[in-house]
Image (cartoon, rainbow over all chains, first blue to last red; front, side, top):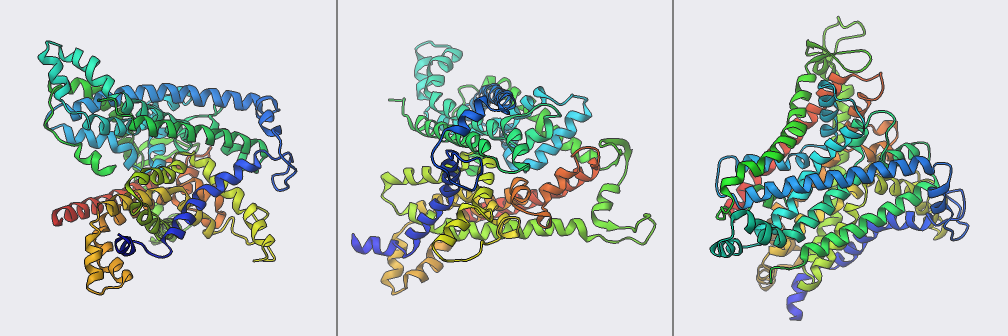
Length: 268
Length: 308
């Protein structure tokens, strides 16, 4: 056994892994720590305080942040729900629809938003809305988010459905369940972990998006990322670090939930 | 991830074959109308004439591509010579993205290898640890990087306090800052595919190499690396492609000299000063580059699959 692990182990690889994790987490940790800084300067440390968290909610810029947060969360919830419903239907057709000509092109279309560079997607969406005379605002953001969230919702749902054997539905139909009933009562509940996981990922992707939103939002409407970007352009401020830390925490919690839900085995 | 999506899994199950077109209709409608059609419209826009307040005049023209590649002098009547301004922006983006990819590979490969050689039960935990930062808002991660790298930021403070340097390092607003930002943005993309291929690697091959008196590093170079090459290439593409069109890292961490494709495109659509057809043409050039890279990659993966 020791000889075996010896062939596998390379000196320095453990160190590189630790270095990798330090690089990944250090900037986030530093911002989190400094968001609790009592000082109004971002450089000087003056002790722990929740001052900037309070500032986010009641400070001079709080109205702007609340409006941006409302836009961000409402768009993320609606876009992720629509994308999840569309992705669930598409996954059923692709995983349970047999072999047919449109299958591979459909998969290509669904994964298109991840293949095309984000800035290109942003430009083309802006140009498209402009050419059909769709005034930029809340609705354009919502539509664009729904479209690019589909692949993120789709992939975990497809992965889950592939793991469920079709014997379950066949058993139900042998017992005179209709196909619709077999879908609703058997396949859908079994797929739930994949669907929840897909919804959460789509939600985070929508909540986080900056580039596409920045192009299609039009004047006068902000989401959290565009508001943060506008603020950072004028210099780093402690209240931005408090907002960033809250969003960061939310992402970590949601990804953790998504991770454990997708592993949850309810086929037994 | 890409591999699974491309194959779509087994095609044996056909319970819902009759409803498949109805089930696919919503995704075709939404993606066809709001992703595929816009890319086509963008292609058309790149051949239109610019309007001075932003927007376009519906008149066919090669002007956007001409401006991208050729210089015709101040009044547009000189002999066309190759215009380097925009080509050099693309060239800079290519090597910035390339350096970020190499940096990710140097850190990502040992990490992926280390995770893949952990006991089976703990691997998922390590992978999870590497993926979490990816899901944190890219803007927030880039802002964090900016905060860390500033002249009077925590990194310089730390280095001065432990006596490594006397004066702060000027990292922010340099090419290095942009490379670090890109590297930081996409590092998890490097680790995951390499990890997946090392996990499938059969370590008895390394043992055989050791029995034949190969040193460990020879075994790594001659046995392991060729075996996991598809994963390494996939990781490099997943870092290189998004880095190429990145906007946030060059915009927030770079200075005026570190202009990349993303900023060049963004500028064309900002306010009234922009040039929409030119922005569309630059986007088309970027999209073409990405499609070519992905096609070469797909061919390579198919060849690797045929070999194994």
